[in-house]
Image (cartoon, rainbow, N blue to C red; front, side):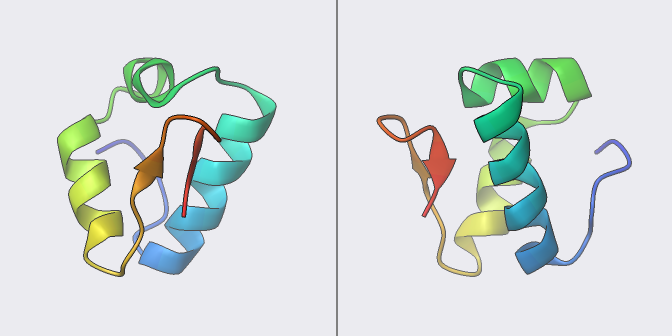
Length: 59
């Protein structure tokens, strides 16, 4: 993955802020940051968070 936070809770905040302020969906964020959507979702799922398309955020 690109230079993104390793700590899952900080990563959650980072990703949700990016989704809220800069991206219309998770695919766009992952493509722009050159990160694997699967790896990102797996890392956040490990601490109980899943992507919600309707809110464009992890909850």
